Length: 424
Image (cartoon, rainbow, N blue to C red; front, side):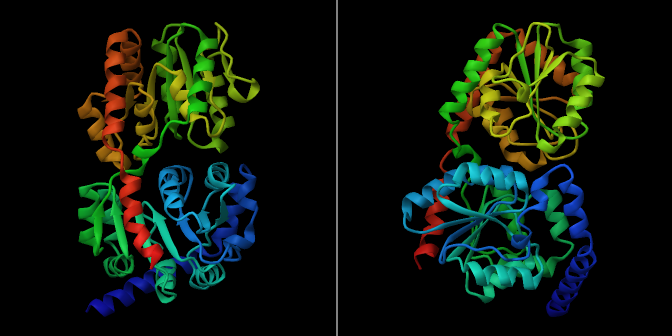
């Protein structure tokens, strides 16, 4: 029966890939209308990438995963300075982030789609010594091909929400076969480890969340302080990493309730939505400026909203604000990373939907570093209360700094698991 179930699951997966094949170029063309990067490096998406032989290979699908990998990359480069580094991703923003962070020390390419002949071609061309798949990137054909070529794989900074676990459980035999081909699973939390073990993983270790190890870059903190000096004494509410469906209600609630002196800094998660969000601000009839329109984000007295249409400056926005809302959490999208805001010492607000960061959110709230709100009106109400209470802001900020410091160390623990495989 297990063999029959595995054959059944493989057949379903392959049929799904076959059905999706004609849609892939259409999707790239569609996404390429707004992000030209989707139309570039096509040969890499077909497995035609080149890299130095014997590289340490890390796959991080997009921006968040690529940033999370930074402390691990630093730890592994310090432990193995002579080993070349290969980074793969799936999105243009992920590629841009990788090139900005590691371009001088790494080869950065796209990972091909999970078709057997493409991933075999990719792995035979690049021949990495080891592969680290960040968070939960379970691609059956890729994992199977790596196993056939004796390339050990690590699932690093692994997280698996209950919702995702239910999805993988629909193909239980295929999921088990994938997980059992992973040499080491490094889970963020005990809950993640338990779900992965239940699905069939072996050699599971709880190493913590790499995002706690990301230190705020001093140059961005200085940049944020410079912006804040230009804004003067205005109270500043930051809505960071917002997603589709969140900006419009936030803008309505802000227009209805916030005094004119409060500045809303609005930073969408995805750059292809910058113009769309600008149109939402215009529709809300709030005077605004765009970060891209100035050398530094100016905010005249009449400016109500500053649109943060820039990449790689999130820590600067955190440093410049008084209160930070972390997006992706008002809509049922799972939330974004609240650790960065806490590590800068800013009070944090999150919405009801944080299943992508369940443990970190729970710990931040328990530590007194974050508050949960239900909707956009409650967000603006809570923010205004905090903006009017400097002592409460200071207590939450100090709690955030302590919370972030208390949970560091994941990079060293994960490096200790990876290095023996790399040295083998």
